[in-house]
Structures are given as C-alpha cells and as structure tokens.
Image (cartoon, rainbow, N blue to C red; front, side, top):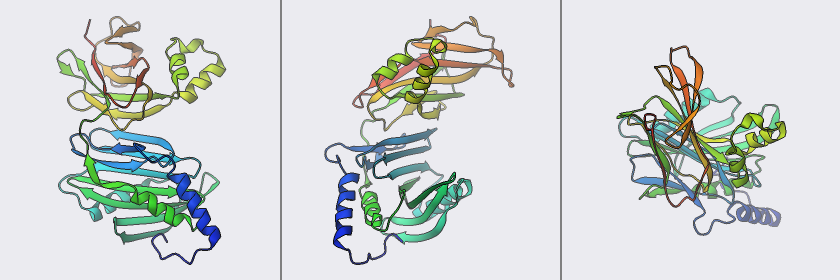
Length: 326
C-alpha cells in the first residue's frame, strides 16, 4: 500500500529510484508546468509536466475541468479534476461524490480498493490488473480536496507498477501546487456565438489540435474528399479533437490550460428556418455548412468550421461569431 514505511533498500533499488526520479521530472525547471482552473475563480491548480505532455483535457460547461499529463516513457499519468458543487465543498463529501460516480461507470475491474486518510486529504487506492485482455498492473492513487464550492481530485497512476514506484508516485503527487496560485489573466482560446443581438445557447464547441504545421496546412487545403486514402488516414491521425464544451448561457465559450500549437475551432448547432442559401458559404471567418434535411426535432443541423491558427500560449485568441453578419 502506498504510504507504508518502505523496507530497507538495496543499492540496486536506490539506483532504480534515482533513474525514475530523473526520468519523471526531466525538464521540470523553469515553466514546465500546466494549470487547470474554473471560469470565475481567482485560483488554479498547478501540476508538473513530468517530462511528458498534456494527454487530455475536458471542459464541460462552466462547472467542470479536467487536465492530465502523461509521460509515455515512464508510464506515469498525473491528472486533476475540478468540479463545482452546490454550497461549500468539503474533502470527504467530495471523495464520496466523485468516487461513487467513477466506480459505477468504469468498464474495468478495480482490485485491492482501499479508502484511507493521507496528509493531503481523503484518498482512494486501487489497482487495475487488466483491460481489454491486456495486462496493465496499473496502480492508482486519488486524493480528494476542496476549496470554496469546488471539489478537487488529484490522481496519479503507474502502469506495470513495481514496489519502488510507490515513492515516485508520492513525489509526483506532492509536486502539485495545492496552495492554488493566483490565476491572474487567463490565456485562452475563447469566443462568443451570436444570432444578431441574441446569444446562440444550444451549441457544442470543438477544439481541434494539429500535430504540426504540416498537418494544419493539409487540413486547410480545402476539399478533404479529394484526398488520397493514405492522406486522409494521415490527417485523421494528426488532427484529433483536443476538447469540447457546451456554450454558456451568454453564448460564450472558453478553452484554457492549452499548450502552444496549431488549433482550429468548429461549432455545431441547430436552426429552425430553412437555410438560405443552402450551399456552404463563409461568415465571420468560418465556413458554414448545413445538413440538407431536417433532424428529428424539425431543425437543420449546422456546422461552422474555422481555419487552423497558431496559439503561442502567451496571448489569448478570441472569436466573435455572428451568423447574421454580412
């Protein structure tokens, strides 16, 4: 169990730990950290990149954020979830709320489940031995905290876990800044969707990430249907959706905690009147495409696709979209 007093180390184990520490925290000097925060909060959680990269980030409305960092070489994953709740949050109720929901929805078996207390807060520890027929031996440690009306979950895991990995996992967990550094000005990809003077409130926003400039330029060429099968497969691999969010009640959306790179934004929403013109056209810098038929609700599915752009991580990129703009 993580947190137990370790047995006396042999010289070989000490060397192993030194190598793990060096690999996991390689490149952590300077600004090699990423941050996650909720809109409207003046604090954030800061976590190290661990010599790896951002593996995923989820943004559901204005009440949930998740950010994960993965070191493919060492197989360590570190993530933070922030979830807004009604009223003041406390760490134990956060553990009950978040853990029960997760346990009910996972598609794999959890072994050796232990609920315990740690210096960082209430915790859950378990192991996933296999998934989809593949041996994982992945150890998980989750610690639950709270601040104001937000539940916070700190999560570190290690695939192909061995006993000496315990100390490495604890060191990774302790590298999270739980004192919450001031968020200051949030650097983000953001925008507002409007239909004339009214906000568009029933829309899903997708943030697409491109592996490099070459991939972004391939995407920007135009008619993807004319790509060769090999090129289409390559584009599918190098241009995944990085995150998605439901637009807010004011028509606004925001993506934060992003690494520098090439991105594109697209929107999906529905309109009631028949589109005129029905053919694709450009508006507010976006290519507008309508479905040629009504969906089950009697509305027309609509997509607005933006062009790739480079986000440097130092300055926000803002879009102002109006589907009635000339």
